[in-house]
Length: 126
Image 1 (cartoon, rainbow, N blue to C red):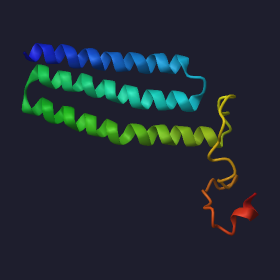
Image 2 (image 1 turned 45 degrees about the vertical axis):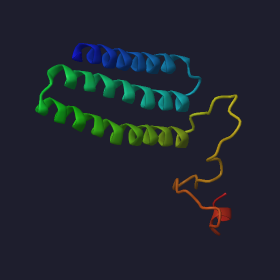
Image 3 (image 1 turned 135 degrees about the vertical axis):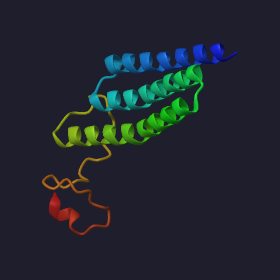
Image 4 (image 1 turned 180 degrees about the vertical axis):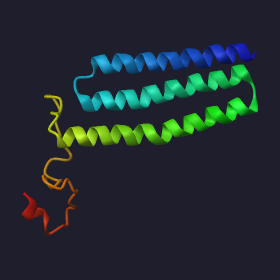
């Protein structure tokens, strides 16, 4: 019975990693590529690790698998956010058919600090 779980989990994990790889090739700009790889690859890696835990069926392996999954869930979104933010500040353009840039005009160009809507210094920074 556990063989079916291992096959199912590892197949789903490989499928999500394949979808992440296809997304890297197919998405039109850096920001969409970051989104695809962070979500799909994290889920794929998690499923493959769970399949490995089921295969070895030991408490030590399960605890390591859960620690790795927790580490991935905590660090992948933060890393993707930092890459996206650095890309935005260095001038990497959005996709030409993007309709809205939510961050346009909300950051000070020199300090990269986010200005709130009620900030009186916001008009000075423009």
